[in-house]
Image 1 (cartoon, rainbow, N blue to C red):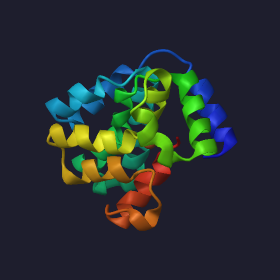
Image 2: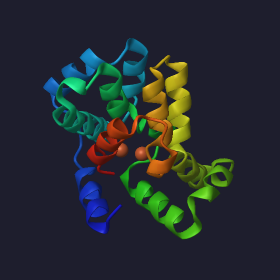
Image 3: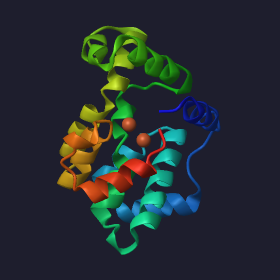
Length: 171
Ligand SMILES: [Fe+2]
Ligand SMILES: [Fe+2]
């Protein structure tokens, strides 16, 4: 992630509120009832990010933007709901990972307080995949949650679809 991107995302995430009403209705038309329960647990800026990523995927893929592909775009970051971190501490989490390495995340997650929350935040791909498994999501949705921060050579999602999902994700 570039510094410019981090800064843009940081200021964007200070705006309160979720996505526009039309976007919420669109999301409700895509997700299953159990997925929708999860999606509603996102805080406002995450719901906006989710809808924006899915809109870009829809534009890029046109007719090939199937329901599971759009759901994968909407729910890739759903594991973040478990950490309860807001904007300021997310910056700390990103910096901690850069300094100490993401491999410390499981250790931090067993700690307490903000250290634990940072660990959980950095583990959001695996946590998200587990939540989506419990929600009965399509295998593509589960796989993309788990893989969206992995290098392309570790994706199991079909490469052309995964590339579009990756390019649409700006965080
Ligand atoms: Fe993510
Ligand atoms: Fe994302």
